[in-house]
Each structure stands twice: as C-alpha cells, then as structure tokens.
Length: 363
Image (cartoon, rainbow, N blue to C red; front, side):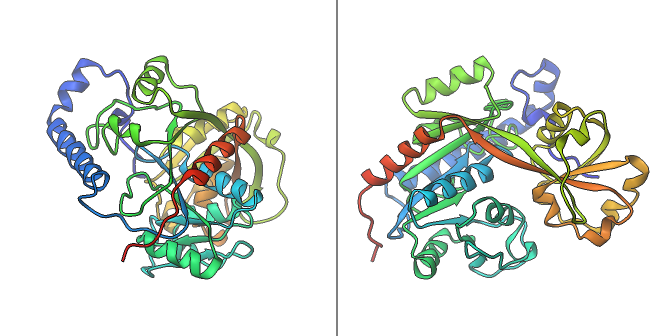
C-alpha cells in the first residue's frame, strides 16, 4: 500500500519540530514557486504567446495540487451551460492514461467511446455526470479545442484542471479550494501543497469553496488576495450505493452502523472517510493508493478477510475489473455536487462569456 500524500503538505499551523525537519525543502519550494510565477508572467505580458481557439474557453482549476473538486465542478458547469443552450465540450488532460493518441473522444454526449486505459479515469467520470456534453482528452488543449470545434461545433470549451495551462487563452478562470484545506501550509511544492504562490489567485474570475467553510485564517487570506472576486460554495454529497459487480443499488442507510473497508486511489482519501463516517459507517480497514493508481490484482487480494463490505469511488471503479473482486463485497459510492445558488454562478460565467472579445486564431 502506498501513502497518498504526506500529511505535512496540508497542515496550516505546524509545530516547531516539523518546521525544522522540513527546512531543507524550503529552497526547492521557493524555486518552484518562482518558476511557476515567471511562467505565468511571461504569458500575461505577452512575451510568450498563448494559442487561441475561436470559441469561448472556461477553465476550472486550483492553486492546490489534487482533490479540490475540479472534476465535479467542471461536469456541473458544463452540463448547466449545455442546458442553457450552449454547445459545450469538456476537455481533460487525461492524467494516468496509458494511450498516447493526441486527441481521444471519450464521449460524444450520448455514448462512452473509450476505455480508461486510453483516456484516464476522470474523463469517464466527467462523461457520466455531464450528460449530453462531449468529452475529449489530450495534453495539447489547443488541439483538443480545434477538435471540439470541427467535430462537435463547440461554442464553449470547459477545461478540467486548466488554471496553470497558460498556453491556451481563456475567458473565465474558476479557481477552487477544498474547504478543509484552503491554502494548506501556504508553501509551494514540495514544501507545501501549492502549485503556485498564493498571489496567483488574483488572476481568478470566480472562486469556489468546496465542502467548506474555510477556517477563519484561510478565509481572511482568500479575501485579502481577491476581495472583489465572485465566490460560490458547494458540497459533494453521497447519493447512491451500487455493487461494483453490477446489479440494483441500495439505500445509503445500508451503511449506518456497518463495518466497512475503504478502497481508493484519490488525492484526498480523507474526504471519502469523512463521508462514510457521516453516513454512520465505521471504517475498520483501508487500502489507499496514489491518485490515478493503476490497479493490479495483487492490490485487491484478501479484501474479504479485512472487512465484510468495501466502499470505493466512482473514479476508482472504472479501473477495477469485476472479476477481480468476486470474493469481496465492493460497493461504489456515488457523489453529486450541490452548488449554493447555482443560478448566480451560471449568470456570472455567462456574463463574462458574453463580455469576452471575439477571438480569432493567431496566424
């Protein structure tokens, strides 16, 4: 079993002994933050030219590495814009995929047309939740954008995890925070969890706090950096429990008082644990792996001996063959995103899309 991430990445207030122990990582973190800041500055000043696609572009991203709720927010926003009449296409980099095709059509909005090996795990979750919205995968987001235009006639491209992807011009940048983490320790990688220095938040057009509220000190820091930026709040809530092997689902009440094992390869397994405990389950065993983990049959041996019931995520479920868990009772916990005043969020995004200048490709 592989630890998912070091706990010290997330501690906002660190004891003195931990600060001393992690002191050697400070210069690396400063260097990382400086390089990330320079990268953003080069594009902002026009010293490096970003690519353009002739449609509106909305980025869903985060300052923090992993687990801020980018995928569910991207799916929610894409589906909501689709219902308002926009021709929306979702674009993902496809982390963890084994295939190397430049662009992969994961879904045409009606049918899933790819396997996780070709596209990665999160795009399949996007396709399942953003009904009616095509999903494409590719490292080159500009190329993905052109494919979205040529194949699906997109007028809005939604990027899942795009805040640090400066090579493609955007019209709206949505930046998310996990309510339980915020800025974490406030340091950049590898000393802390931040992909960029906190000052990068000033580039955000919209801020979202997922599963909040933030701690008072974290909220104060956010307001100091972006005092006038529109902010929304959302919660991830469990809605279903279905057998991994197939068959009818069960009510969530099944978990009340149950002894369960937790099987996950996600950035923030503590969120799954917190959800299970809130449903009344008692977690008696855990197998946690790195984000986007590629499961092997050895990872799943002996599950039935550790717990009578195992719970996994939708993201993990797409990578676990049913035949590998015949001797264990494994259930998939379905999660939905609930946004407080989602209409106001949509109005804010649409207003910015309407105000954005018409974009022409660079020659």
